Length: 159
Ligand code: 4NP
Image (cartoon, rainbow, N blue to C red; front, side, top):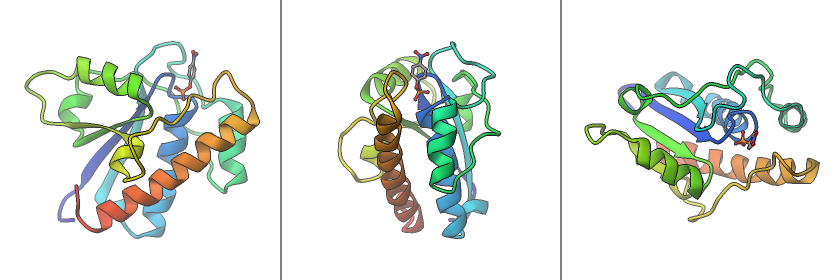
């Protein structure tokens, strides 16, 4: 890659799936030596948790897999994100729909489903917020697989 490619990961609250994905993807990109070429961030379509740290269950789950996301803070998806990022990756199809509705007509940003863009299939990362530790583990596994697919795709320059 010759220039910085920017990716924003989007979910409903920006306290469970998208901060986990931001942390895991940053770790995997660093391992692959791609981090200097990629700018990463995450945001929420909803505004219930703006300014909050990730959910403690998401922090614990990521830590058990060696990734520290405790320093991240939730923020809202804003108009400028559609101008400033190359790619918006959405956690599920509801978020994908909502994000596409908000996309200004003039914006050139790609908006895609995260697992789909990663080559894993047209599938959601289920929201673990109302679930238990097993739901967070399940989401983590999907996110980790997505991160591997995203790194491979960026490595091959397919973006
Ligand atoms: P996330 O999970 O979208 O993965 O951050 C959620 C967090 C909070 C809520 C829903 C989903 N909520 O309804 O407050």
